[in-house]
Length: 96
Length: 96
Image 1 (cartoon, rainbow over the protein chains, first blue to last red):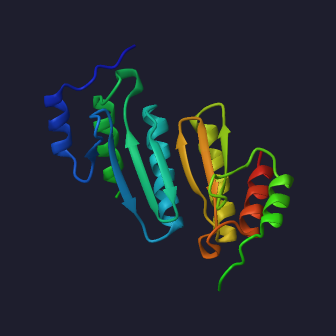
Image 2 (image 1 turned 135 degrees about the vertical axis):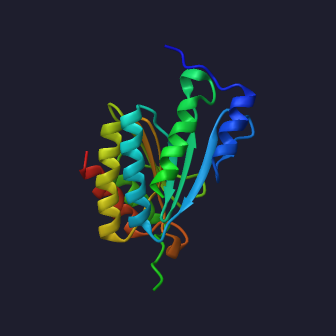
């Protein structure tokens, strides 16, 4: 099953509804950097994101250095951004 | 408290005792890529590494994409590799 890629208008609307997420230069992914008090808080957040990701079967590309977490969302089956990325970004933001 | 950086001889001995870890080109960090069956297994591993890191108060720079985990170890207080990186790499390998 192929997931449709967002049109440019849909992408702009999705980004407009999010705060803190930026479009990658190639337009095919969105990213956000998060900062926490320490590693324990950062990894607690990552654990909650992992549960969201597994539930949605949509997994981030992400990295962590001590109290920082960087998350990139894209949909490989769509060759770019899909509604699943927008929904995951919203769900992640609701954790904060 | 400054942590002493490994000498070149100590570094080579530490790397010789590890398998799968590679020295970064600048000689200041070691890295290893891990591959699992799926995201659930990868994140379970990351959770165990997080507990090790918190216990040792020595945290990795790491990233995850679905079933892959890439870990880089370095000691900022040493400006390069220290015995703490070698000990953490050994502890991570014992999880497997």
